[in-house]
Length: 107
Image (cartoon, rainbow, N blue to C red; front, side):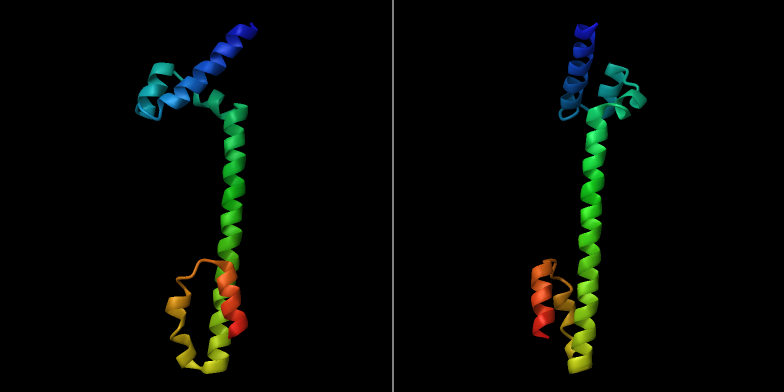
């Protein structure tokens, strides 16, 4: 029984690596995979959790960046008027939060 389970797991791993060189649809057809079983596997669940964590982190970073840009824009407008806002297209291209923080402090 345990040997069959190990073979099944090995089969899944080999099929996964096969998708790097063979079309995924063909691998599914050859393996006659039931996607429900794959989705319930611990490996698949771990991949999902990692993806969710990374997605949340990207979303949080994007939100902080957008807030930082809004703060910079408001500060430039308050201190320098419309002339200060002319810098926003260049500033908006900056992705690094530390650089944006430094710009806000300088303004």
